[in-house]
Length: 239
Image 1 (spheres, rainbow, N blue to C red):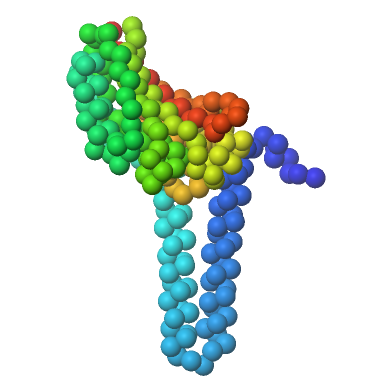
Image 2 (cartoon, one colour):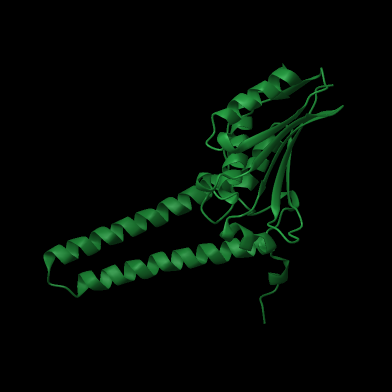
């Protein structure tokens, strides 16, 4: 029988734990192989090579765990909020996107009918945008496949929105869709960062929350074609 409470584990988190366990098991198996080689050989050069491989594998394992800790236990300074008009804010968004590797594949939609102002932290906002664009570039097939990435900047009566959409054509990502948990971005979700562990969007959501914004994501029905992934960042306007 499964342990008590196992049925409550979110599918995305369960898959993350399974993948991490699999990767760590592979690392330990590799170390065991190299150690066996070193202990059973009288060739000094072979022993040195095996010890070097052990050191490299252990170091890589340490970096993986450190990276996961960094993104799962985010530490960033208190937001430095800057107030600006909607038009100027949108212009800043466009300029930042234009510096990203995804820029050549972006098509824009702009709707600015607001003269209001908003407050945000430019650095934290840039980090959110970088995650969304990197995610879009990978899931849409990478630069080699000339992906289609749609970015919309929209303004309503009480908020502004950044919407990033792209088809999910990267095979591993398509296979992942059925396992993802997008509710409040709790736990792993489809993401370009941290390899296949997928904490990048969760980290972006925490950054958004720290500046009073909200990040939501969804996947369109697959139908006959590939699924489309949509991320929406909502920032309230200053009253």
